[in-house]
Image (cartoon, rainbow, N blue to C red; front, side, top):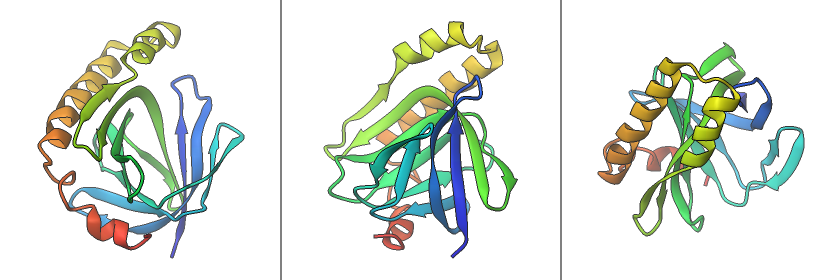
Length: 166
């Protein structure tokens, strides 16, 4: 399987979450990557420990978000980061700018919007342009509905990809 390095950065270019994954494939929703239990993960240059349970990542082709789908027993079923549109500088690396907002679905079915306070602070600190703010807010609104209503890929589409790393 081809390895792909995932690199999220903050708006100022600072290195954020980053780690190696396996390229699983592509479908109508985007490109799917997988991380197995034990995969080393870093926040910036600091190791945060290995992945405790497998997960898959979805990078849509032209959307302002990415999604992480976790295997049980992880308490978070789906974690969506509001980001810039993913950029592939090479076949072995994907990057995106983390825009703070997150849409999360717990195993209980609860769907929440997280980090609105961080988003507000960073709009000022990093000088987010008006179009970036608008895209981030529109993406968060759409995801709250789609994840809550279990529209694909947030229904069952991700299960087949998760089986490949579980």
